[in-house]
Structures are given as structure tokens and as C-alpha cells.
Amino acid sequence: MNNKVLTCDFDDTLATTVFTAWDGTSLSPIFRVIDFVNKKIDEGYEVHIVTFRNHSNKQEVLNFCKGHGIKIKSVVCTEGKTKTEFIKKLNSSLLQRGSLIKFNF
Image 1: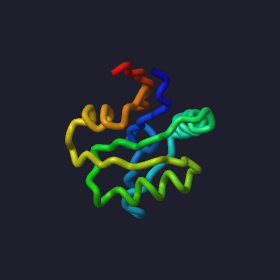
Image 2: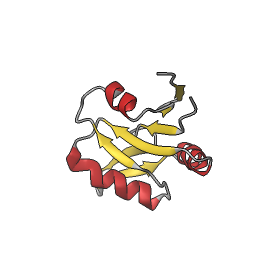
Image 3: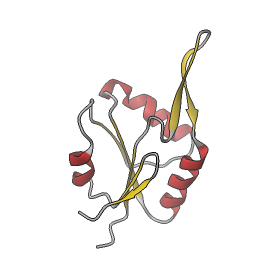
């Protein structure tokens, strides 16, 4: 089976949250991962962001991806639940977190 679905974590994978006293929080891009994800998109992969974040943070993730040219299919907010079932439902073959994980469900 050759499904081209990449699921990607958000926090500490695509972006790092930076806290400053004068600006509050901001997202700092992790370019090596962004470049990898965009390369997979160019190779025909469908990309879904699967994050522990709450639904109230979904727009922030969408805005970040749009601002960095990442053409994602969806953002799935698990609201702190384990990601495994969400990843299985998406039929993901690859997961990008700190490192790349291949699946064979």
C-alpha cells in the first residue's frame, strides 16, 4: 500500500513557542522541518497537522502554515488526547515529530 499521507506535530516540530516579557508569546519557525514537509508536499503527500492543542488554537496553526507556505489538508486538534487514533483514521504512512516515524498499519 502506497498511501501518501504525512501527519505532522506542530509544537516543537514546525514551530517553537517563544516567550518574551515585552511581546508575550510568538511562534518561531523550525525551517528544516518546514522544508522537509514542503518537499513531501511537492512529492504528492497530503499533510495533516495533528496537535495536542485545543480547537481554540486551530486558527493560529492555520495562519502559521499559510504564512510559511505549508499547504496542509487539515489541522486536527486532539485537545490533549493521544494522537494514535487520529493518525490511524488519517491512514498516515509518515509522522514528523522530533524525528521521522514510518507507519505500516
